[in-house]
Image (tube, one colour):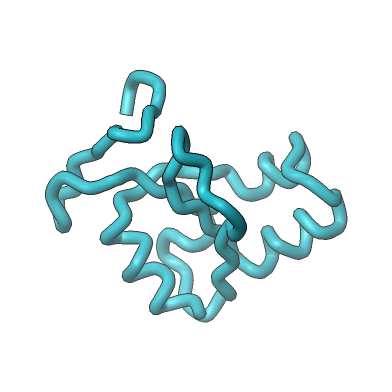
Length: 93
């Protein structure tokens, strides 16, 4: 994506065209039935991007109590488009 994200950021997806970026743990990209956990609460108007992770990452997050070097190192967060995130969600819930 190159530069810093802002609320109007978009990314080009070969499958879905121009989309809002989203972020997932590396396990969800090709996984199935891994669980699907998504950030909840009031969205930040300056950072309106969906973020999701698998059950294993959620367990580590709960053990750590927050996103930190250990939980983030395990998750290895990666960007995907919002259309891909919808497909990943349906495979993993």
